[in-house]
Image (tube, rainbow, N blue to C red; front, side, top):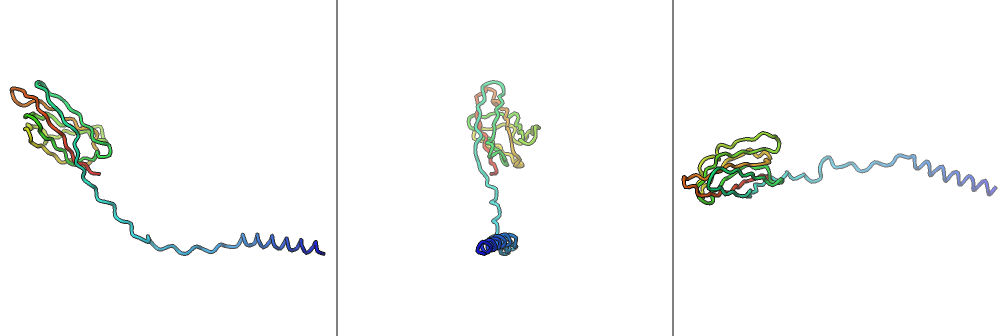
Length: 155
């Protein structure tokens, strides 16, 4: 009789354990119907001015200078050519965008760039791969001139 009692108790204990596993689990508390704290708006874009470098013309002929913006600051919205030494002639300025293979010629930057003079143009803020500047000395005695390319990028 003791064996039967132990057998019945064992079966009863096992069956109630299995039965408890099949019972539905209570639902968690209802979540808050929105974000508990509002998500802050994204920070406004920040303008970062920096220089791409400079170039020096020789006494004769024209030279082409290629400038490549930093990959993390390639969304340029303003470009500025600054004359450093002697007057020079900016023959052509080509801008190649990163999202297309076509080049755009920037006519507003072309012309004579005097020493300590500035020529500036606004761009649309698309990513830029390369800026090519073709320059030559401007006076008839052909003194070498220098310039610098400054940009303002959106970060």
